[in-house]
Length: 383
Image (cartoon, rainbow, N blue to C red; front, side, top):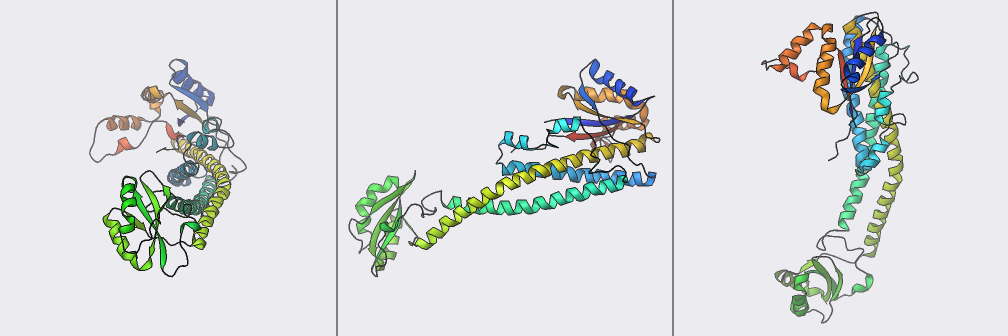
C-alpha cells in the first residue's frame, strides 16, 4: 500500500495554472510523483475565529479517526487469522481499493451536506466514528471471549498426556466400574520405560490385579496405560509409581461430564462459525465508513488551513501526490523551491530543523510553506 501527500497552493491567475506548475515541476521532467487533483467542494467558510478553533479540533479528530480506521483494519486481520491477501481484499472504501478511492476522491454530499457549517460536518464525522469505535469494542470483546473459550478447550484436548482431556481417548469398557473393592487407574508411562512398566506394575503395590494393564493411546513421548487394583492400595501404588517415573492421572470415568465437554466444544465451535460471517461483513462495511470519514476529515483540514493561510476569497488548488519512494527527499526540495515565496518563516523553520536548538522541537513538526497532510494507506502491521 502507499503513502500520499495531500497539499494545497493558492490559485495563480487560475487554479489550473497552479496545477500545471506542479505537474511541470514534479512529473514532466523528473518523475518524482504521480499526481491527481483533489476535489474539495465549496464549503461554508464561517468566521476566522471559528476556523482557528476548528483547525485544532480537526487535528485531534484526524488522529482519532485514523486510530479507529487502523483498529478496524487490524481486527479484520486478527479475525481472518492474518491471511494477508484476504485482509487486503476486504479493506475497501466504497467498494474500491484505498488507492483508487483516495486518488479519485469525490465529496459525499449525502453523508456530509455542504450546506451545513464546517463545525457541523466535523461533528457528524465525530459521532459516526465514535459509534463505530464503541461497536467495535463490544463486538470484538464478545468474539474474543468465544474464541478464547474455544482455544482453552482445544488446548485441553491436545497437548501432553499428562494434562490433556481424555474424553476422546477412553471408553467405558476400559474401566472396572461400580465395584466396591476394585478401581481402574490411568498411568502415563514414557515410551522409553514401557519395558519397566510391564515388568514392575503388578508389584508396585500389594493388591494389583495381574495382567490388568492395557495400552490405550500413545503420543510422541508417552503412552496411556490402564491398571486395575484394590481401592485400599491406591496411595501406595501412586507413591511407588512416581518413584519409577510413571505418572498416575487423576481421572474418574464420568460419561455425563465427558459428554458435556464434547457438547460445549461443539457449541462454541458452531457459535464461532455463526458469528464469523456477520462479523467480517460488519468490519468490511465499517472499515469503509471509517476510511471515507477519515479522507473527508483530511479534505476539511486542507480547506480550513488553506483559507487561514491564503486568505479569502477561497482560491486554492488541492493536489494529491503519490511520491516515488526513491525520490521523496528530492520531491520535498522541489516543492519547497516551488512554494517558498508563500511563507518566509517556513524557510527559517527548515533551517532550524537542520540544527539542533535546545528547547525547540520544530524538527518533529512537519511545517512547509504550502499546506500539507499525509494520508498513509498502509494500515496494517503484520506481526
